[in-house]
Figure 1 (spheres, rainbow, N blue to C red):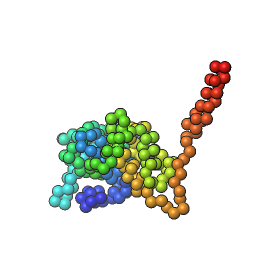
Figure 2: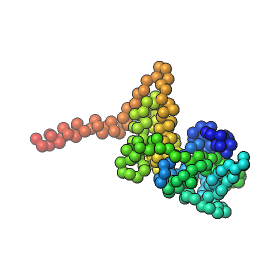
Figure 3: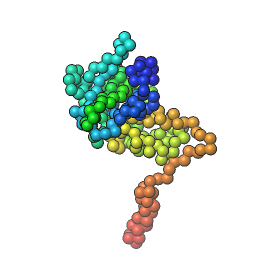
Figure 4: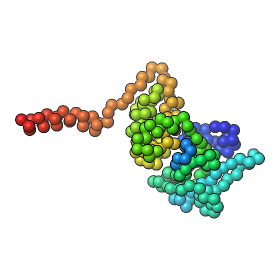
Length: 233
């Protein structure tokens, strides 16, 4: 990340990793395009409620950080809506992202028993490079694609990751929409696939076999068709 982010959040080094030793993590970057919605998602190691969560915008002025609280107690200028899913995933949704919304966002969580505060930061930025491909995949125009479509798209890149590894990565990622993938997640997943595009020596790319249920259905089709023909006779 650039010099500004290094000053704001020097402990964020890798995607999906929050401040070292802290019980909360967030991707170091969150992606959007002008006029679309985005959900910034953090994951906490313990159960939380909305009352324990605060979101702020962070800027650097004259070498000092300045936080403007946008959600939580005493937030004067509220921005976006917050939801907590499964008690551990914390999402801040901005309905329409414009240039004025870009920058750094920090989430703070207070432990319910120890009252210890933890925080981590992400940078919201535009990404135009991936949007045309994403729009082609988004057949319903919902700014969402299916998780299965995401998996097959990653498999079609020059990544050396197997389908099994890709499925595991996506299932472990911060997905708030069950079987759906939004643009922000799409960009992060594609970047992950391309970072793993150099094939290690002695390793070949092999896609996993079809899931057992699908394979079983394919095997049963000829049997069903045969029974139909026998009944007609």
